[in-house]
Length: 327
Image (cartoon, rainbow, N blue to C red; front, side):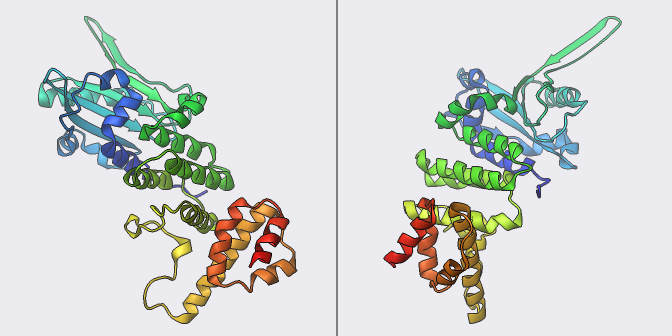
């Protein structure tokens, strides 16, 4: 299955969009100490000066954030998200070096936090230390391991914090690396959950962008995914995602709609849509006989779109026959 190499990007973006929620989800004790009425200050330029190597070949997302305690005193948070697949031998040392540089710059210690997204259940770095004659240093930082949430799936489903969805998407992306069809089904399931849990349009779009980025699908399933998503949104009358052009993702179900397309392109789009509907039908009811395919080939584009919505409730050929008879 195709993979993206810039997984830090969606993590950094979602952390900035929901930073208080991230701290509340992963580090609730720390969240209670912070005065969230004062907006967090993201120190991107300062951190880039302290750790210029993070811009080269990174497989993680780092944030240096200035917040305020409830008593009014400033506090620096170094939040590190490690998304690479394999453990890193010098991870704890790197956390210590960053913390040391922050102290040197601001003359104030940082609260160092790490979110470990790898698939190795035994890799749990949380301390860096060394000893030599007359000297001992021990640096400890707080960590969470996303794999631990696999055993808390029901709790994640019931949790309205946006980062419950983030964790679910990450875990299912790992779980379905070798099964594209299961990934498509889980991707649709997670997106449906956004609507059914009552998230706002803004939250649906932000969380969809993260899900779509980490749960990448092969070309053969992308268009089927978009068709099912469009049908679901039309059924619920909430076209948040498929109607938003500025998201910028590929939409196989919308290709060919740009102004000025020639009539031949329009016909090509109709055939493409017909093929996708047939694919989804066979996933629902099994192999279609040739005479059924001939009947479906006579449907107009409007009828095909109606069928794409109706087939969500099909389970047998009889369901399809009843639908066609009603037309």
